[in-house]
Length: 143
Length: 288
Image 1: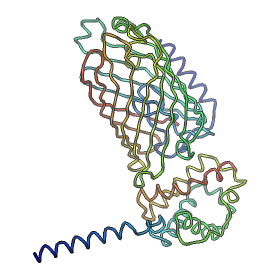
Image 2: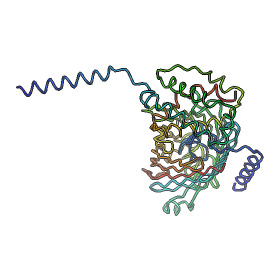
Image 3: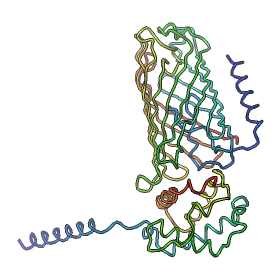
Image 4: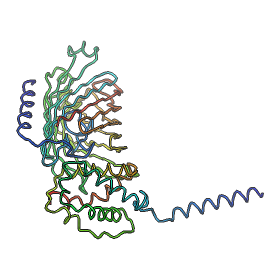
């Protein structure tokens, strides 16, 4: 009888824990990938990748890299649901006048994927980040 | 027929060499899709809305492919070339060789049937990955047999015909537990019996019929795609049953120059022989 009660209490507890877990707010992509340190790592890797790509580097020839780094970290943070504020310009304004081709855009996506991979993101996490960033693609191409 | 094919090939060469901008790393890896058994860009058995190649709106691309299907009683090999222009128009040429088993060979006096397929496809709208709606393309495949002995013996009305299709394809980034999902739906108007290898139209039905074809796949990594396909088939010949086709496939894309796909296909009954299942192997090389 005692063991039955013990077992019942145990099962009840497990049940409560399971329910509590279900009620917890879903973790943001930002938290899932590892928060601010990972945002910084991705951004630094991305800058590194760009600096080794002749074609894409051209677009950044006149860019203030320190400012780009700061704003890109913010942008990644906000886009993935992190607790930041984006203080940079819109994607349209940033890319306007650069006439970015589809091929160069896709090459840059490849560079960003490499940056995320080096920052330790799993393939599903990389896809989720691309999914949120891809929404503004139209503002970046051929502007 | 062979001369016609060569002419097309040289036309493709002239057209493509006239343009200087070529696809190098245009699209994202694996988004060029595969080479369809009839030469169009697609999955394996089903033509998709994707164009065969990694070209973007500023580029051209060209690819060659080789496919072998080895089922219980038959073998089919298909070789061809496809070229895509500015992510808008795709032209393709394929030659299929259908090897008959010795028993049928003796009865009919035919060992193999060759079929030439000229294909054209136009992307109407949408971007496979980035638009909210699917990429939609319209295409045709004009097919002609080198001889009609088997086709007419089985009751087919013609030895050439044209399939028309409308295809919608979409990649959903990270949709399934973070993995990208690709789906395709194709509506095809056709009179072809077993893809045309057994002629076009028949004593049972001689009109165009609408068939549905579909594919679904999952990108397990940037390089590996697994999925399945279904291709509905008409039933025009009263004396020989024709079944829908299905397959499960795994595709390997190590880089943007090469693709290798293996599939287990179930073709059902083909030209009186039941339970035709076996291995499908396909390779695509992207020239530029």
